Amino acid sequence: MKKIEVKTESKSYEVLIGQNVFSQFVQDFNKPDFKILVVCDKNVYRLHRTRIDDLLNSKENFYFYSFNSTERNKNLKNTELIYKHLFKNNFSRKDAIVALGGGIVGDVAGFVAATYMRGISFYQVPTTLLSMVDSSVGGKTGVNFIEIKNLIGAFYQPEKVYADLNFLETLSPKEIISGAGEIFKYAFLADEENYLLIRNKLAKLLSEKKFDENLIARCIKLKAAVVENDEKELSGLRKVLNLGHTFAHAFESALKFQIKHGEAVIAGIFASLIVSEKLDIISKSDFQKYVSDFLFLPVNKKILNSDTDSVIEFMKSDKKTSDRKIKLVLASKPGNMLIDVFVDERLVKKSLKELFEIFRTV
Ligand SMILES: NC(=O)c1ccc[n+]([C@@H]2O[C@H](COP(=O)([O-])OP(=O)(O)OC[C@H]3O[C@@H](n4cnc5c(N)ncnc54)[C@H](O)[C@@H]3O)[C@@H](O)[C@H]2O)c1
Ligand SMILES: O=C(O)C(=O)C[C@@H](O)[C@H](O)[C@H](O)COP(=O)(O)O
Ligand SMILES: [Zn+2]
Image 1: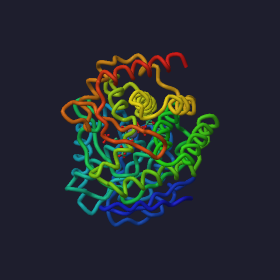
Image 2: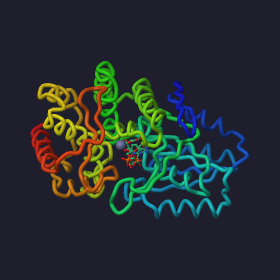
Image 3: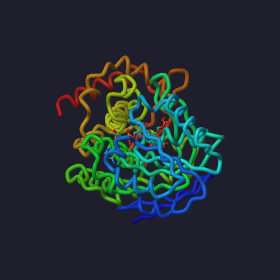
């Protein structure tokens, strides 16, 4: 088992990664003198019922709430239902919430924890590759609103994160690819050596479908280093974790959430590389190298058939734009990122068309 310490201004906490870390969770909550609401993904409950029932039945102070984790359910209506459940069961500020599921459950349950009675303790038990390498760490919580991703939210760090690799065994190939999307971005967050390591481990993960504790730990360490230096995205450093995301969130919204977040991120990062090349931030030969290095990552066909005008409209409404001008995070080379780059919308449109052309023929 690996243990990573995340030290942010608002909270320091441990992330445990390994096989059967869930039993550590059960042990940690052996005799709690407070109530715990487990907010669980319905699929996770169906697939891992025995383990979860064992936990719930073993103690009286465990309460349960489950929902279908879709982007459509990542909304304020769902948070209201959870607030009601908490209130009905007399939850107070000394009690706690556990997110047991992927990034959707984590974002929703985390937002409820941040806002119910102005904040109650929150624990993350991520069950997808994406949530282990990214969403369970760093404290971004929130919901979608008026078709815009994560428009309502709060920064709220968990007390502890338990990443149990056993959960990953039931993931579908599509969900593994979605997790790979966020791992792709970590290749650009540090030096060449990290780039190569991530590239090779990610290619291996997709071909062998084996989950590497070291790869997951590396991603979490990279994220923690950023979050520790800019917890609330104030200095701007944290924006590097958003590589490809202005495109990605627009693809998701334009396609009415019919694609996975990580799939959108894969396409978004490739689109950002195209923009970088067009702006001469990266050379043609480096661009070709980066694309060919990660060509094993599939781009969802729905994205390639999306309407560029609609994608651009959503990019202009992204939370991080100013005055509806498109602003991107771009990579110039591994370890060298540019934030807040204003890009002319005609160049964005050209880049989208080029992305569609390249990947239609792959
Ligand atoms: N807060 C952050 O920092 C952050 C970071 C990245 C992504 N996100 C958000 O996270 C969400 C995406 O997360 P996700 O991909 O984990 O989505 P998710 O929670 O929807 O899970 C994806 C799918 O996998 C299923 N699933 C979950 N665990 C499973 C398991 N062990 N076995 C089989 N199936 C399982 C779910 O039922 C769902 O269908 C998006 O909403 C994205 O915006 C947040
Ligand atoms: O932790 C961060 O910071 C990230 O940007 C991680 C992203 O992968 C994640 O998708 C996040 O939810 C995006 O945040 P947003 O502020 O762009 O909505
Ligand atoms: Zn993301």
